[in-house]
Length: 256
Ligand SMILES: [Zn+2]
Ligand SMILES: [Zn+2]
Image (cartoon, rainbow, N blue to C red; front, side, top):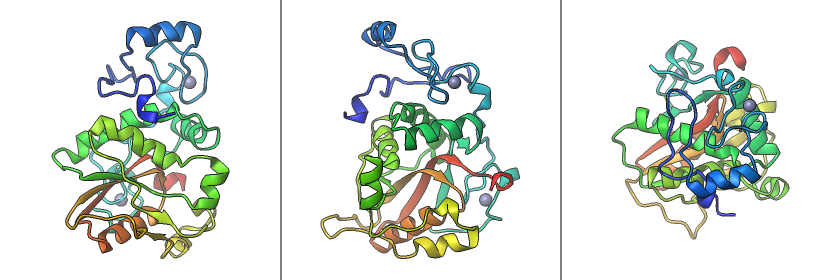
């Protein structure tokens, strides 16, 4: 199924009154009588258009400005100590805790692609707030290796990137490949993560990066930022001028 054609994921989607509410079309509301929509975080049925239930909403820990430009956490939760990276900036709508963590798990391991809607709306809103006037030439997802994408059937970063494309009106392009599998970053101590992903990403010969372009790099979550940093480095080697990053969730120092 084309993610962009999924019900509700359209540019009319909006957040109202601090609650995640999506304006549905008449046929979508009718369909929800037969097939109730479900909360992205816990899977319980919700009122049509409310993508997160009232129990989970307060458990979504939003990241509020002012933000650290390098790790994307609120300045008071900065985990990078102001360490500059190849990514020009990073932002995420939520901390990798509570309901957002459950929702991301549902997207990543249970294949609940509709969960991406909630994240894409929130990511788009954060991008508009933080990146303001930046004009992106394309949206690029962080790739999975061939072995992992076979096992998981789809790349959650690609699902998020494709969901963001119509909201931001920017094309999604798979410009990166992951050459071989590495140990999962979350299983390694922070000091080993940069080395673990060093040299594993590349741009395949059939892809072309316009010199001086500005890229929005998309991943599901960020912890130390080593993966995003390595991807941004490669994109810049191949000609990108600027690489701005966005992830669905970010870990803060106290949670690592
Ligand atoms: Zn819920
Ligand atoms: Zn920081």
